[in-house]
Length: 373
Ligand SMILES: Nc1ncnc2c1ncn2[C@@H]1O[C@H](COP(=O)(O)OP(=O)(O)OP(=O)(O)O)[C@@H](O)[C@H]1O
Ligand SMILES: [Mg+2]
Image: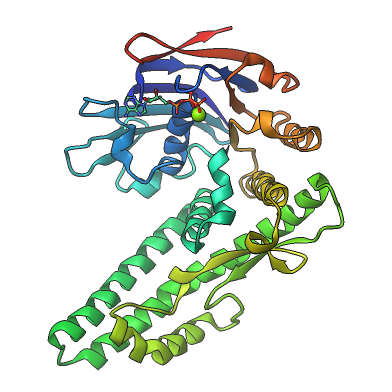
């Protein structure tokens, strides 16, 4: 797929921008702080409903403004798609999605109209940060590939919230029919956990196969065995519903004390291993970066296979930092794929086989504009 049009109003330091992205490789160059990442962030928002760098939507609205708008049109194998996100900092809901100009019933409905894979310096957090960063990564990528996943995730989290609320109420003020109520929530949570665990297991197995192959292709030492593993309460269970129910029963006493559900896929993790040892603790800086790049390249392949077409690639500041071998691996993945690549100097993108150069500049008020050439 590719973006045929991108429009932004009052988004970050763009008062207004209209762009027809090239279907091939575009290099966005400009000084630090000019607005390159902001543009990629807007495309990420259109694809996944959120920024790649902040959980706070409000930050994306231009300072002093009361609404921001991002509108994208894409061409997919099944035809043209039209998706719009508007952010209102002072209203509820703060985020509204429009499909083909009409309000969408749910934010999740926006999935699948635009698909992107972003490479950014922050990706290293997938390895370095705690499990929640990796769950977020898995959840976002799965939602892109399978829009129904997001619905399953939402319903699990909503049951979880209710169960936690009951645990809290019981400890604080006592609940007379606590056992009956918690049994009901356990049953519902087990029902909701099954599709989640199944989807994650499938995703991590497929992504893992691709990432292992990519790692071998780009590592200094091709014999280094890199592996992804699904780590979690239901990761290895053939009867996840039963395992979930049993786990909840076992943990009930502790949960009552802590007023929190301690067992279930909300605590899952994506394990990354090199030579069977945990990468985060054991890997060198270079190995960590290679692993992240392999995961991303593996993701492109998985999206292509599952959706029948490539996503748009957003490469923020990563190209110039890669050595020749990794650069070539990345370029191989961008053949025939819409790619937007940022760098500070035009020369940094030499070798990227660019179809188009765009210069991002700021005026004296800090507002960004884009000049071709
Ligand atoms: N909500 C906002 N409203 C107005 N301007 C903003 C807002 N958020 C960020 N900015 C401005 O956007 C600019 C940063 O843009 P961006 O992160 O896209 O820079 P960049 O071109 O990617 O720079 P670098 O090369 O350093 O990565 C800064 O000048 C910042 O002040
Ligand atoms: Mg940037």
